[in-house]
Length: 155
Image 1 (spheres, rainbow, N blue to C red):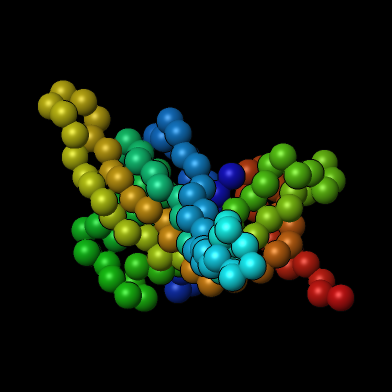
Image 2: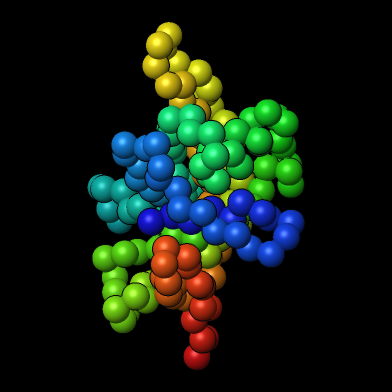
């Protein structure tokens, strides 16, 4: 599950990403360095970093909090800090307690890739949530669909 902070300059207001979407997955795009050492015939590959993102396309559903927020970015042609917010990535398959799940909170930027569609059909908006920097690891407790993030204690 991904929750987007739709009020980045105010108090957090998390909205679930997914209404009007039929698929979505995270892309990790590892940055790799391959080197062949003089004692080997085959290369050694190290992982340097990740460029995590969530590519999405959703039907335009006026009144849906995520759609309204992303469409607002499109309308303003938001760039720089105007295109930034936060995203909670919640692993609903890693249950800590009954309503508590492992989660990561990231800063993110949102880019718009497309808007529109075929005649007679509900238009859609294509977007990419680009995860920025290192996460705050922790847990999310869900109460009536509203997430509350608790940062993990560092040893």
